[in-house]
Structures are given as C-alpha cells and as structure tokens.
Image (cartoon, rainbow, N blue to C red; front, side, top):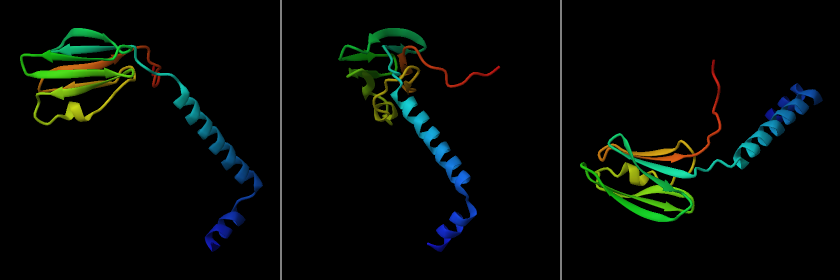
Length: 128
C-alpha cells in the first residue's frame, strides 16, 4: 500500500490524464480491430503443389481427397474449414482446428496438402 502512495506522489494530474488517454486510445483501437469483418469466401485445397479444388465456405460440406501420399478429409462448417481426418502420423493438421481468415492455411506435409482460405485481406503493414 505504501508503494502505491509513493507512486501517486510522483505523478501529477497531467501524468495521470496522459496515462488514461493512452489506455482509452489503445482499448478503442483493439475493439475497432476486433470488429472488422475478416472472413474468407473460398477455400483452396492444393495437393502436391497444384490447385486441385476450390470450395465455397458458405456451404457446409465434408470432402475426402486421396493423394499419392495418403488421404485427407476436409470439413467446412459455419463458414470455417478444418482438416477432419488425415492419414499422417502426427495429426498436426487435424489438431490445428478451424480457420476462417483470408490467408490462413493448414498444411499437411506428409500428404503434401495445403488447405488455404481465400478472400480479401487487409494489409498487416506497408514497406517501401
């Protein structure tokens, strides 16, 4: 409790106002970013480096694909996609869960399969 009093004596009203302003701006930016719609509209399933299938995220479906390297099952549900089942050993692609943001992807290296969400993305940053 005494350390709180010591800090309070070191800060004046302007310092506290500036800290409060920074917190309000940071919270406002966080809430604004979270409200931005950022959902993909399609899913591209690529097997061994070539685009094999384009699927619509608005239609719930389960698709299975047999590759030269194994099999993989993709589920689209409620505008999200995941790898439901895979023949690979470690099942990392299955444990990744649902994705829905443009540019997000699930990669199954043993089956040489990439499941990628497509859509309009906003820039993370611009460099020159």
